[in-house]
Image (cartoon, rainbow, N blue to C red; front, side, top):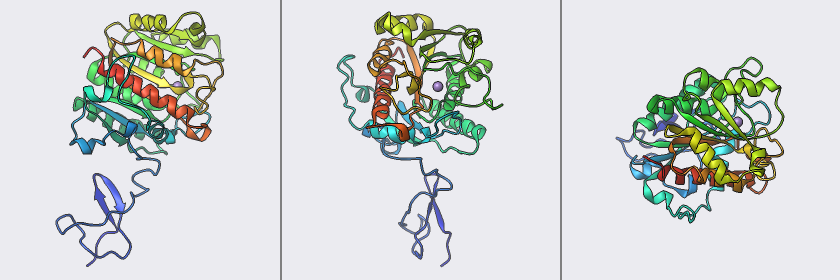
Length: 343
Ligand SMILES: [Mn+2]
């Protein structure tokens, strides 16, 4: 009997065991399934699930919130490695417990939350990957699933915003980051981890004058960076403000800015000081603490949250999972916010 050297199960191609000559199709019987084909599913793809949640296939596709990895870092300008972020965040999430005492909510019990694994990305083609992320995200949204994405570098926020805006209309973006990410190009490239929100503005994905940067710190290229950024509809709460006013006041300021518009929260883990997150792609000293970040997200309770992401975790530069654990807890806060949000 001659047969193919590969087999496709759930859209992933696996190698057949060498020398195996047993049944070759499901119709003929059970087949051995080997490792995933490294040319179809990148090797840095699937791993264990976030917070040890079920995979989507283990709950028969029924989930209202999905955790989705995007292991892509071909948009980075400095330290690469965020392609391993989804795996690291999942690894750092294993200790998350079901009950959130401050919000008095059990995020995993309000609605079904499931891990949908990683989007299949092409590390050699940014535009193709943006299309893949947008398509997969759009598919989840069309099934009434809200998404929290695990990056990956910040490039991935653009296709996620495209998908979310197509469903909900223009979005109020709450952007936690040490950087503005509204630069034009890097080395002539329009789609990078430093440019997603300029593209989002240009594509009309952002609600007019409703978005806000939170926690920005570190040097800029020029004074004009800030002036241009305001023209894209952003206001700014820099990291320095956190020494002047508390997280509750900052949360109130953000809530006022976004109003009742659909809100997307994008968290670049480099908003944290490198002491609290040593492993981002572009670290800047002088950031906020992990506690401040969690408290501000908590203080957003009541906004109309429709999705979010946590990006730029590059575990090669991490120590003792500090960055990955911080990112996992940010995801947990976003989940708690989603299940307590106004819809
Ligand atoms: Mn960023």
